Image (cartoon, rainbow, N blue to C red):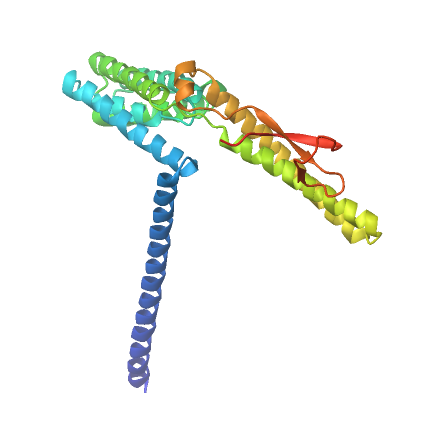
Length: 310
């Protein structure tokens, strides 16, 4: 009886495994289809006109071009054995703004120098690669938390790992590694600053227009309920929730303005003209009877400024 029962269970187990395999394949196919559709949508949006998708494509291609240029200079022209370091640093330093690229270049270069110097000195103290790793990596990870390094401090520990793992901890290797890091930083920052420098103004326009629109909708709703005397505690709670939404929108606008100011730092006037910023702000008036946008007369009681569309 036991053998018969086991024999009966085996086909059931095979069937459950087959069903599970089919479900996994179907799930994988759905995920692949969703990713394919998302990729097509991003590509289509990138070619249709200016937008976040196009900015993403431009920055990605700039990072790849910076890495290739750094490899060409370091490996082909200079023949440096540490050419990988230049490409690696150049790839990472094509950031969202020119200012952040320059700041992170300084932070990363300092972290790489610290990691390289400590990794080259650790074997002389411990006498073995394992001891050098045990000495240098914990110290560098603690040093990575220093605020002056920003989020680039971890590169000190990774540089020490690469240095000790490859066995290139001599004075000549240290000089090559630091020199290539400096070369990659210069190329990455130069590519980001000179080739279509990133300027972020779109979020400010969108948040500013949305803030005016949402404020008008809220005022229209409050005025309508008060005029019709049909408001209650639930209506007041809705007004309070909408007001909180306006606060969140205002915080998002402040953050976008700070991001926009940073993107305009260290960008030359001629280069800024290539990525033309929007024109001056125009007043969008809100009519008191409706709380909505009005362009008919200048006699409306309140107004808010939004940038002119290009």
